[in-house]
Length: 126
Length: 126
DNA sequence: AAACAAACTTGCATTTTGCAAGTTGCTGGA
DNA sequence: TCCAGCAACTTGCAAAATGCAAGTTTGTTT
Image (cartoon, rainbow over all chains, first blue to last red; front, side, top):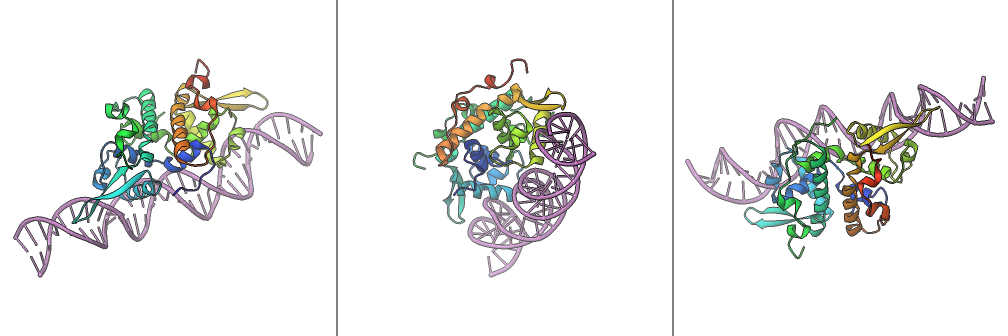
């Protein structure tokens, strides 16, 4: 379930889960409503396919997303946020707020993002 | 000043600055009042000295911290947050909140951290 | 003059990331 | 039936980032 943590510091531990170049970008894309591998692969940042596959697997193993079939013949799966994953929304919002304030020329975040709440992004039961 | 950004997405761009294993952990340690290289090197997560030196240099080049002498003979420097760096506090707070909620056994954050505001951590002029 | 200390720096091994091409399972058309 | 096509990965290898231990620099203390 969890990786080895560097310490019991909550900040450092959170970063042991999401502290790399791609994990939070993948989550952002799922928040944006892209749930299939192909949709995710087309994100504007051009992630490599092996990295995307690896991050989806890790996110699932950490319980931040689920992988479930949405059709048969052929079987296709979709990736959805769990409560644990959706609860990272405030982290993404604060990163976006910081970037908007300090880096010129960023896109402005859409309202569903800046005003959204974690509960808006996962089904009641998960 | 800035690196090459993967896109103009504010989330992805913020992560182009702080999205690695160590940058935010170093910033957390500076927020905690450790301002000298030696103090930082003793953080509980055991960062390598070359990585620490590299991150301090990058943080300075991005304008998130400053390096200034605090004594002569021998000259010694200290690292302080700028406004731009201190404004990352909400990101750290949200990471800590998430970890406290979802990862068992984390240390609980001290009050100066969870209730602090960016302005508490940089001198009025910087 | 020799030992000491802080703050890095260097060399090299290991791990992670990036890129391009290849594979698998299934479908729909000729 | 056979083959082109597509989604969703997987594989092999090169490049970059990270980790570890030892070394260097500059000035201080004894």
